[in-house]
Structures are given as structure tokens and as C-alpha cells.
Image (tube, rainbow, N blue to C red; front, side):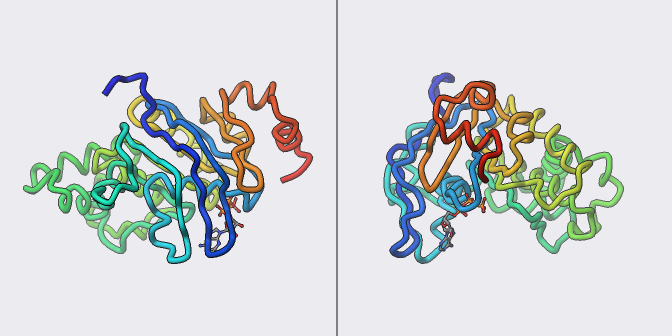
Length: 255
Ligand SMILES: Nc1ncnc2c1ncn2[C@@H]1O[C@H](COP(=O)(O)OP(=O)(O)OP(=O)(O)O)[C@@H](O)[C@H]1O
């Protein structure tokens, strides 16, 4: 893959839930090694768009997606696309940390095992340590790998979920308001982690918090009423937006 090609491309994406259209004609590139923040007022379609990128909307019976979304040039909605494989390549971290009710070790080992990335205990040990280290959690949990993932603090659970996504070697990580259930210290840790992960994966993050978008992202996409109003370098969006609606939103006139 040529490195300056976008990791993912979305073209003319429309999403409806039953008769209600939630997204209108969204086109965007998701770039390798960058963080893109999706911002905009509640209900504008940020999460809906994020979920189109790994076909999470397939799980919503009323949702219909059309348009063209590609990962490394490959149509992710093509009938031959293996959705389980896709969701390993395009991992997701949710608003509320959702570790499996299993041990910390198993939370990480499960994915690599079912995807055949690691099989024997020794291989799994390596993947578990590497994933937890990358997620900034290893030192806190290395002596309690058999404890339940659900016994960790909220911030640790979220880093466990990030480690779980990392364990299957994703190319893209989608984060849907990953800090909204966390306190400021846990939030700062996740933001730090996003910085560290940036060179390795393409990351897209939905956030309500504009300071967070400004801190963690290089590109920002502003959504309003189901449309992508403006997309550009984060510094431009926050200091010199082109569209009046973007200006109104970032200056707090609505939202
Ligand atoms: N499962 C669903 N069924 C029906 N309508 C939905 C569903 N999910 C989202 N919607 C609708 O689609 C629109 C966009 O919602 P979405 O959650 O994508 O917005 P959002 O910008 O992420 O909002 P928030 O910031 O509040 O999470 C909203 O009108 C919402 O009510």
C-alpha cells in the first residue's frame, strides 16, 4: 500500500434509520497515522458515521447505508467482505467501557485466539503483554492478569478495551466518545494514549468535547444536521473555519 493513500475513503454516504435519514452525502478520507475528530451537536450523525466505517450499523435492523466506503481501496460493503475480519482491521472502542466478564488475560487473548493470530500459551502471553503495554496498562495489571476485567476502575477498563482492540493488529481504531464516562485523570490518560497510538494506526474519535478534539486530533470533521459541514486541519477548524456554521459551533453559539 502506498503510504500517502488514505487508509479509508468514504464517498457519498447516506444512512437512514427506517424512514428517517440521519446522514446525507458524507465524503471524507481517513488518513494513516493521523487522528481525526468528529465533532458537532448532539444528534448530528457523528456516531452513525463512525459506525459505518466498520459496519457496526449492520447490527441495527432499521439502518440502511449506501455510498462507497473503502479500506485500502477495498469496498467494505462488498458481499464478499468478511465482517468479522473487517471489525478486527477496524477496531472499535465504545463510550461505556465494555470488558468481557472474564479475566484481564482472557479479555486480550480472546481475539488473537479466534483470529488465529496466536495459539499456544507462550504466543498469547506475548500478545497480552504487548497489547497491555501499548495501552499503558501493563504495569498496573501485570500481577493480576487472572482478575476479572470488570473489577478494574472505569479508566483502566477503557484502556483494557483499547488493548483488546489492539491485540488483533487493527489498522484503524474507532473511538465513540471514549472518555465521556471517565473522570479527568482517566481522561487525560486516554488522551495521552491516543497520542502514543497515533503513529501506528489511523484513529477516528467522536467527541463532544472541543478541547479534547483540539488536543488529540490533527484533522477535524464538523457535522451538523446529518451533513459534513467542514473537514480540515484541526488548527484551521478551530482558529479559522471557512463555514459560518462551524464558526458558530466552535464559538459556542449552539450545541
Ligand atoms: N439505532 C437507531 N435507530 C433510530 N434512529 C437512530 C439510531 N441511532 C441514531 N439514530 C438517529 O440518528 C440521528 C443521528 O444520531 P447519532 O447518534 O449518529 O448522532 P450523534 O451526533 O452521534 O449524537 P450524540 O452526540 O448525541 O451521540 C439522530 O437523530 C438519532 O436519533
